[in-house]
Image 1 (cartoon, rainbow, N blue to C red):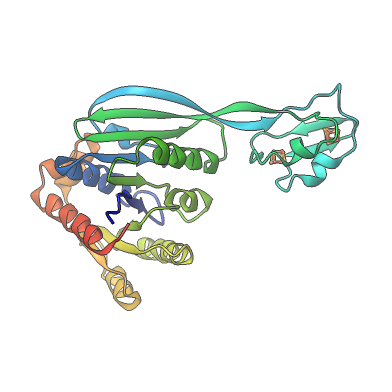
Image 2 (cartoon, protein in one colour):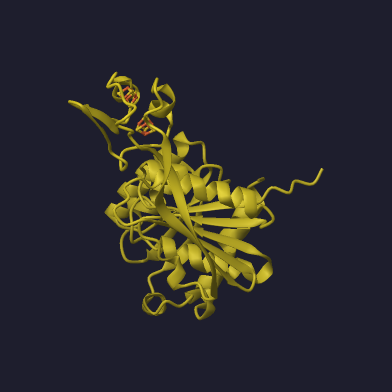
Length: 291
Ligand code: SF4
Ligand code: SF4
């Protein structure tokens, strides 16, 4: 039987500024030369892949989460809602029920357990999803509303939208938030392989170790890309060897790549060695992962 599941690749890093955007955008654009490819920017607090992806903005849709609204006229001040909310997002202050929408996870518990239906759920805008198309490359940007603190619901919603509407894209690349907290866990969910982009410095190594630990707990296969290779030491390589983690590519520190990046250009189009590294990364994943 032919498996039609898309190959889902996450690009993550233990910390920001390692070159995750450069790898995601260049890998997606290069892959799109051989077939339709989806790139999704899930770095929802600071998405910037759009700076590098040419093409026309074809759609922007508002994204909502459900938040309870207190109906003072119905409420009997029984106190159930503040007891059931495990996120402390609804609190009784004397004769007033305060709902903190920034803390609310939209779980419906308070609303459903309120005996007098005094907490009906209402939609609340948490962000947008924009779509750009450039030949074979379709790009989605998931962006959190300014002041909105919870990235996870928007990331889940974006994954659901991809599963529902973009399943025919055989290669899907997800640029994940940096770090090892809940947003990155949500972003790598259901992906088949995680590329961890790091740099050969003590900070890079420290954050890589944390990222590897997180991905192992999630049971995700990983490979490492060492960006700006040559600027530091070889401790990252030694660590990868000891841990039997494949180093997918070493991208040398290059003034040309840095300049192209700062101009918003796709560097692989000008730097042949980068194109070879990206091809190497993609071939490894394609040959080892069975989606
Ligand atoms: S559960 Fe309903 S009735 Fe009870 S305090 Fe909360 S809002 Fe009021
Ligand atoms: S919907 Fe869930 S998270 Fe939000 S206030 Fe109610 S119980 Fe708390």
